[in-house]
Image 1 (tube, rainbow, N blue to C red):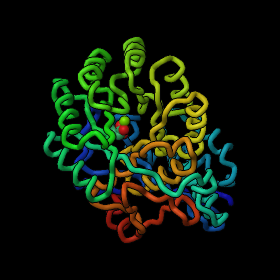
Image 2 (image 1 turned 60 degrees about the horizontal axis):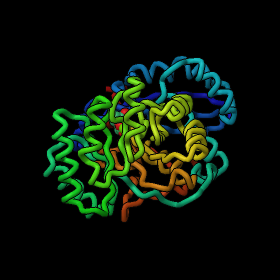
Image 3 (image 1 turned 60 degrees about the vertical axis):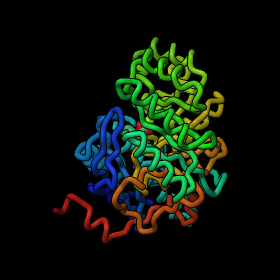
Length: 368
Ligand code: MUC
Ligand code: MG
């Protein structure tokens, strides 16, 4: 299964509803579709979401590294020799979502060559995952309406609320309003994308301690080490490392040095191979994991459910699988359905990404 062709196709799709959060805002998604083709004609597919405000990657840098250094590491190599390929990719630092996509595309090739779903090759624990929906910045009435709509229309019962604004009262009042409007049975957790200082985050924790929140993700900048450690020690709820733990090594460091007490795993940045290592580490340490969302299209969300549903430890809680609902369209030929709050793991060979060629032709931006 020698790798013959590496393609990186940029495409742009507007957001139905722009997503605003403390570290950035997204008005349209500009992603890169990765296709790796073997000499015997098997095509591995994955989606790359460049997130400059999180990893420094841009559409141009992703295309450059995929069709430059990474293509050199891939062409002529057997797609089964994944560890060899990863060792070669590791010689280039950074570029997490480009590396994550290569891994997912290689698993896709493996699954398609065996005629088996990757979800089952990885572990096949459960057929579906419950969904957590991310609520971006907006007024309290607008977010209450959005949450109610998602409860009614999709059966979603878990919401991640984007916070990290100043004055702090804005987000404290929002969280209180959501809890009062949605009742005690809906799960709520917060993600500040480093918007606050550790002291501000401690204030927010105190001010929301009666609201039954389950997690607090990246409240502040984890590189401000002692402040962060104090916050983790004082918090009754787990402090989740997301952008401070984009790799296995970062995850181990943050947990061991007291910078976090739970981990967000995003297949967009650690593929399936490194995500499995992070999951095993979390299980060994006994810390919670959240299957996170990199503002993924349906292509990325299918990869998340393929992985998350494969293992018991990553299926314990709702996974962030619904950001694509904020997008005006998608490239998937067979759209994802959220029913009764769940997304099903794919049962077709490979990762389960099939591209609608007409949509790709109309959204790609390399042939304008
Ligand atoms: C999240 O969980 O932070 C926003 C920025 C990013 O890198 O991911 C999203 C969601
Ligand atoms: Mg986050």
